[in-house]
Image (cartoon, rainbow, N blue to C red; front, side):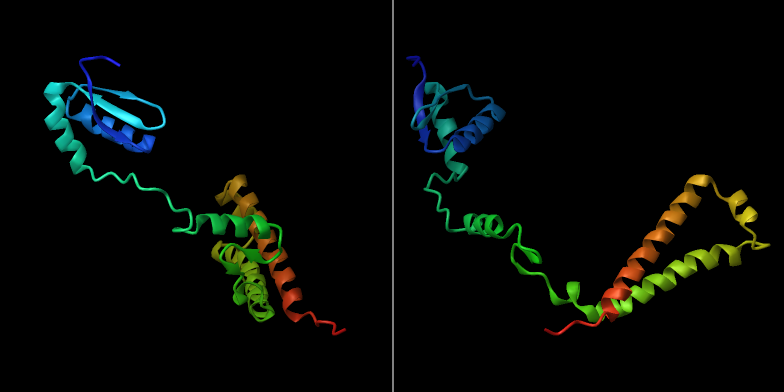
Length: 171
C-alpha cells in the first residue's frame, strides 16, 4: 500500500467499489483500490473530504442480499422442474383460450376463407383475370411468397378445423 494514499471507504461488494471509482474518475479525483475480503477505496489526503462527500451522496447499499425477497430462485426452480411438462409455462398453466376446441371451430374456417381470398383476390383485381397477367405485374419472389403464405393458411386452417370438429372418444 502506498503511504501517500489513505483509505476512504471500504465496501462489501465489488460493484459498489466500481461504481464509486467511476464517480471519482468522472470528477477527476485520483484514487486506487485494493481487493480482498473487503474492497477498499484509497484516495490522496488532499482529496479526502471532496471524495467522501461524493461517495456519501451515492447512497450505496452494502447490506446482505436476501435471495427470498424477489423470488427469483423459486421461479428458476419452478422452471427447472416443469420445463418438459406439456402445456405448462412458468407462472401457471396455459390459458384456456389457447387450447380450447371452441376457438378452433371458428378460427380454422376463418383461415380457410382467408386462404380462398388469397387465391380469388388477385384474379379479380387484374384486368383480364389470367395467370399470365398476374405474373407479369409481380416478380417471382413475391409470387412464391404468396404461394407459401396461401399453403400455410390452408394447412393451419385444415388442422384447426379438424381439431375443432373432432369428436372426443369417451373411455
